[in-house]
Length: 118
Figure 1 (tube, rainbow, N blue to C red):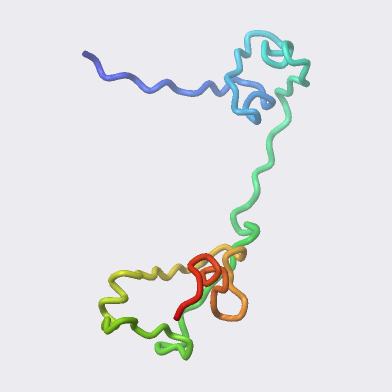
Figure 2: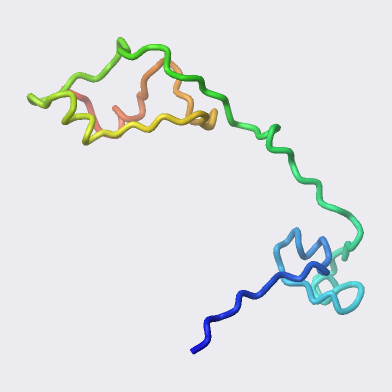
């Protein structure tokens, strides 16, 4: 059995089909999809791609200033700090979405989801 050859995308499709991510027959003008749906078949307009440097919602985050934060969680039920770290791994990123930024330094939603911590 021969391995399947990957089908290449046509570069001749209209921009309307490309923008809609649909296969364009590009046999005639307007193409079959645009004619059938009554869309403006656009073959000359180029799409404008957003520059990566203008990405919205992303903040640069510098290295951590403090190695021992004052609001650190203490081990529960006799666990050592290393055991707790193994169960609750934390990953540090160079940047993170602004929508995930937490105001006030702690996450109140975790308390409401898991109930009160006694």
